[in-house]
Length: 81
Image (cartoon, rainbow, N blue to C red; front, side, top):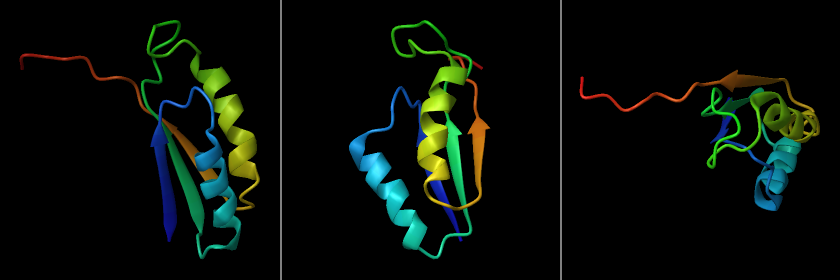
């Protein structure tokens, strides 16, 4: 079974950190973390670049002692199409 965590990740909240730590005792094979708006940097909604956001998240993922993947998803602009 995989665990999925989604977000922009300007930081890892206490609740997210506690949830991730609980995975070390759960029957989880892999943690998949999706960082959304990966291509937005220095904006009001995403003041940090992707590398900084991922660097904050990685230690929390490592503490799960489970294999993990970080998936970067770019923002999809609005379209009339």
